[in-house]
Amino acid sequence: MPANILLVEDEPAIQELIAFNLTQAGHHVLRASTAEAALTLVRNALPDLVLLDWMLPGASGVDIAKRLRSDERTKHVPIIMLTARSDEQDKITGLESGADDYITKPFSPRELLARIKAVLRRRAPQMTDDAVEVQGLKLDPVTHRVTGNGGTIDLGPTEFRLLHFFMTHPERVHSRSQLLDQVWGDHVFVEERTVDVHIRRLRSSLESTGHDALIQTVRGTGYRFSTQQ
Ligand code: CA
Image 1 (cartoon, rainbow, N blue to C red):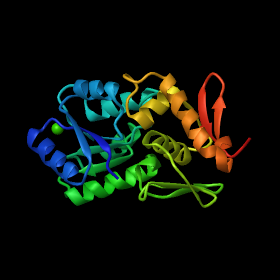
Image 2 (image 1 turned 135 degrees about the vertical axis):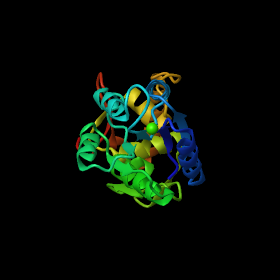
Image 3 (image 1 turned 30 degrees about the vertical axis):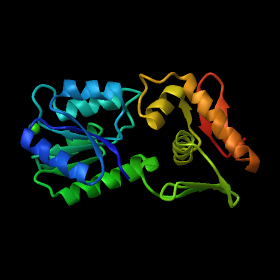
Image 4 (image 1 turned 180 degrees about the vertical axis):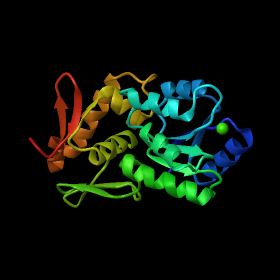
């Protein structure tokens, strides 16, 4: 379950140590030492998860969490707060600011990785390796296989990620720019009509088993994966 993790930590030694452990575990790490640098990175590409130090020079981790939660584009990004404070009131403040979890320094790499996994499982099910099935359409992230009523369906890598995202976020409308962020990982350098091209390919691959009807166009808004007609 490799994830793109944005690590916001101003203490160089701690930043280095955490980045090392995350990289060892197979994650891709982007680093920032200030709120400003962190927000710039988030503008360029949406990370799968943000590890946020509470105490930073300038804007605090709590401020960053609030900013991310108040913006439509970033409000669903999973956030784990890192802090030296173990006070119960601080914990409440951290969680109220929009963090999904809270971890008190010092922590073991193992504990951190376990928390990351738990938050991703809860907030970003497409990041996990759990197989998903909807009406006979099965997708297994481990074997990278998709089957429709038992028969193999061949998908390109982008169509695979797109279908995985749809199946783990059913019955919701996703705009093209949300899909670019979630599936392509970038909303800046890819044109929105690229989404339509891949949706077309995905539908055509699902046609033989009739599962193409699960991918619905919502006029003027985007796309939805739904079992309701
Ligand atoms: Ca700090």
